Amino acid sequence: MMNPIFLIAFPLLAAFLSILSKKLAPVLLLLIALLNTVMAIFIPMGIVGIGGFSFPYGINLYVDTYAQIGLLLVNGLFTVIAILNIKKYKAYSSVLLVALTGLNGLLLTGDLFNLFVFLEISGIAAYLITSSNKKPLSTFHYLVMGSVGSSLYLFGLIILYSMFGTLNFMDMIHQIQVASIDYTDLILPFFMMFVGLGVEAKLLPFNSWVKGVLKHSNTLSGPMVAGVYAAAISLVLGRLIHNLFLFEGKLYLVVVVLLVFGIVLGEAMAFASDDVKEILLYSSISQACITALLFVHGVIIWAVYLIIANGISKTLMFLVTNRAEEQTGNAKMDSLQGLFSNNKVIGIAFTIAALSVIGMPLFAGFVIKLNYLTVLAHLDQLVVIAIILLSSIVEGIYFIRLLIKLWYPKDTDIEPIKFHLSYKIILGLMAAVLLVFGTYSAPLNQLDNSIDQVSEEIEVIFHG
Image 1 (cartoon, rainbow, N blue to C red):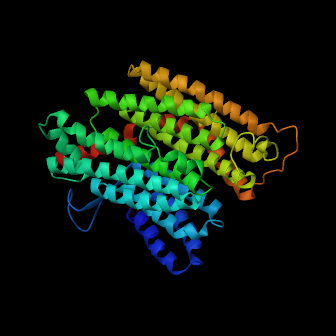
Image 2 (tube, rainbow, N blue to C red; image 1 turned 135 degrees about the vertical axis):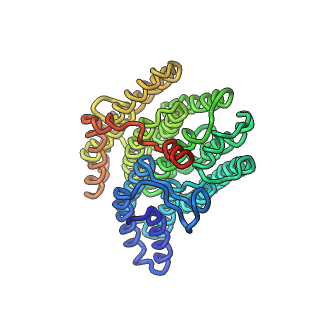
């Protein structure tokens, strides 16, 4: 039977083998990326113990629908980025394999300390990937902020361990449920862990590293950080927010205010910018805050779908923008004006991704936004709905302005920007996914709360 550990072990083993042969490294990267994507489809559900220890001791991996969706998304996007960058960035093959090891570990681990370990592994790989930007100061800033974030997570976890004596994810949830402990005693560890993961998830005001890294990104680092890493960290943060963190009272108010502030400020900064990459990165910050806000209010299904849609859209848009920047020298709207007039397939794909992010009809983003706003309305979160709708209007204005610039060329002739056939095929397929689920949304509507089975598993394990 296929074991979930293979999704971690195979990339790690390949990373060691790739060090021995520079020629073999790119081949191993592509083979492992494709293999992991296929394995994610057939991975069996349940808890897998490592080392022969009985639950809750030892190392445990946990696979449910939530984790499987995350594995498919992360490994699928990772494969796309690897295929399109394998020729130019083949020197980073070993680093990318280590990154895949860490990201799959984040999604699979059932142990809160091992989550920290995989956070460090994937973080180190991310720092090395962003070094391809040739902006060492930005990478150093990312390293410092990432180290602070992971340290805060670890300190919060140490406090929880001293209180409950366990590091197992499900066991800790159970211990908190049955313990007669004042909720205020949990505010500090929960908030420290939230802030720690919020650094990597690009939540304001903990994301000062984002501009330096994504503003100077390339076709490898941009989509990896804004697409793959953002999706993985958002899913991990969402799991903890929904199942572990108890956001109530003043802590709930503080978290919601921070996330709302992030939504508003992210959209405002995107609106004020004339740089395409800045627009995309500020939009990503706002979307990350919306996703976290949905998890805080228990809107799990549509938060996961939002992560999927944003992961696909931002990966696609950063690939296009950074590829164009390589040939023009900058990513200002004026410099890229008319980009799509000679690249209609790329233009259509980018337009579909942008309209999906806005939430326009016929695209996946519309179905997702309509459903999560409906759920929030049933929860009487009218202020949150109003803020999201206002931010959507601002988002629509600057994205439409951007699309007009990119579709309509200047009066003077400009040198055409070229995209390889592989770009056109792969990005066309990614855009098709956003279009299909915007026009045929039955598979989305049919999924119920079985997307997250942690509570059911805890009930079975501890109560029979």
